Image (cartoon, rainbow, N blue to C red; front, side, top):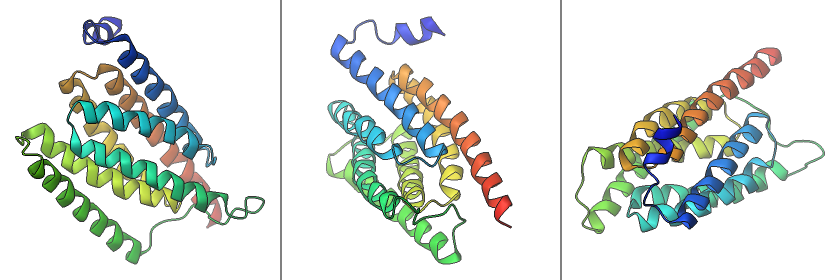
Length: 203
């Protein structure tokens, strides 16, 4: 495992390794806070996404640049939603309504199309990894919106998206981020089970 991580960073500048390490740390911390339904999910997530935006931009992965930019915007929105009436939480964990499912599908579709057209706009040669990027972008955009509303389905989408992202990051040489997404997948499964247990108690 150690060789797997080290090999892909032999010719990488130190500043970039440090930046990825910061993303790795705060990304995991953010998911743990989300699992515990703690508002610090948003400031820790912002540190992670803002650095990731820069790293992905210089690597020309524009679809994921848009994705993480959206994460940053939604972090402010979610921070606001979760902080309303902080002494008495305004939002409760719940399941999506039929209307919210339709909105989620619409968000997924629009995101996937926009991500595709961004690649086309930058005249980027589309290959299989880019189409996977387009798919996961749609999943994560929708999951982030559901997270802001404390809908348990956000974890289902994160589980799928995180699992798919693992081989994608390995292919791109971001082994540390690949490991991070393995941990994200595990944490998302645990979070889903914890939120489901909460919902079961409300019945």
